[in-house]
Image 1 (tube, rainbow, N blue to C red):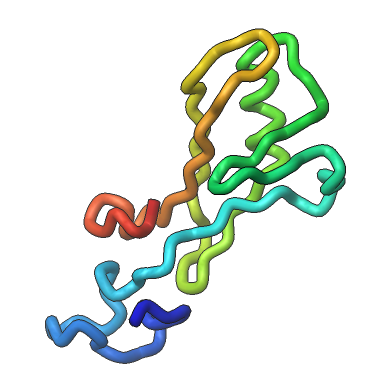
Image 2: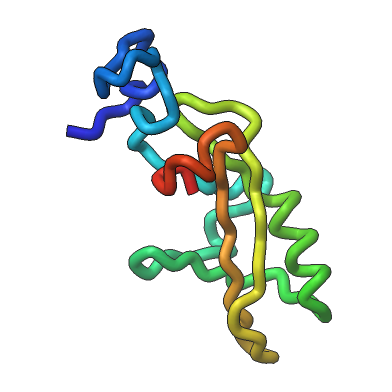
Length: 113
């Protein structure tokens, strides 16, 4: 079972001789809006979050807003990296992907993306 803090509990949980290595951390980081973003401005549909307002006159302005408006949290890691990429560019609805990763583990453990 994957449990919070199993990758940072001081135990060699996968018996590889290394205490709390990256492969033991099986809980992905969470991406959240900071408290300054009112819940009335966004909605959820499954794994997607829709930002209803504000609107932006360029992708760059939207990305800058999201970098300031989001935060990443993890049960074991601090100093997470946040990256944003535009996937679908439409005037009325542009889709972007916001990713949080643990810079220590993201290459060796895909769960940390």
